[in-house]
Amino acid sequence: MILCVGEILADMIGKNENGVFSYERRAGGAPFNVACGVKKFGVKSAFWGSVGNDIIGRFLADFAKNHVDEAYVALNETHNTTLAFVELDERGDRSFCFYRKDTADTYLEAVPFSLLERANIVHIGSLMLSEKRGAEYAVGLAKKAHEAGKLVSFDVNYREDIFPDREEAVVLYKTMLEVADVVKLSEEEYTAFGQEYVQKALKEKLVCVTLGEKGCKWLYRGESNALPTIPVKTVDTTGAGDAFYAGALSRLDGLSKAEWTGETLNKVFAFANVCGALTTRSRGAIDALPSLEEVTSSAGLD
Image (cartoon, rainbow, N blue to C red; front, side, top):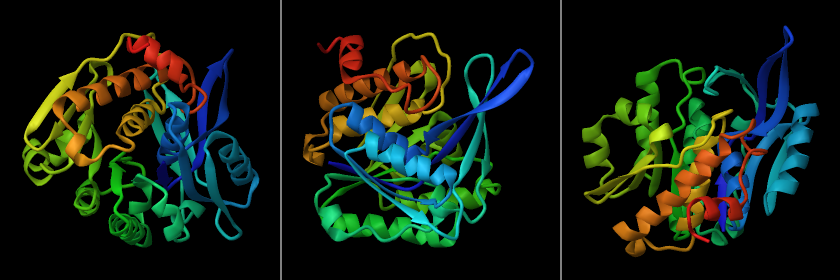
């Protein structure tokens, strides 16, 4: 099982039709997207998060019950649910504006040890790092997961709107990267941290770098490889990285580090590339997730 912990929020996806601009409400939040993708790709998933006891929060809590195997979404009585307004350009690439001031997702309850014990991988979201209590929570959870003998996964998922000070954000992220076993970076994030840091400081970590329409690259203990993705007609890139990562974690589930050979990792990330690519064919992060059958067929695995 893969346990995902962190933000669950509403993606308000903008569209302009006949001169009228409106927003569609969709469930989102990077770690929640990953949890939904993991289940879609054939592996048991659990999600641990918090929303406000408001219209959006209750929608998300109900949505979670139907899209992950085990949903633990607390309803916070004093803090509202986070909103992420998303606008797409003509290529389907998105830009974000977050309504997130002291919201419920920064007040997470402690994950019980009994739940950690049942997971193989504990995946931790990054938005909580923007608050001191969230950063301490994330590092503490990672250490607790390691004590339980579990692998820790972390997606940098840098958002400028959340971390206005880039240098401060990098310092926060490095603290978290030190306690992770599997790390996901975008191409821009890889550049921000620097090739030397990734290749030396993260040498013992399994690092995957998403390259958009060019596919991805993985690095582990001095080995690396770049893998192309499949061509698709892109409509919306929202959640593509999360679908990619869900695909990767679903294939890593149950594998020990000793099994992370070059051959195995090539298969893991070839599968992940297809998951990410197929998700861009329609709008929304979760609604657009492909089925396992679609992925295996497109990847030539059936």
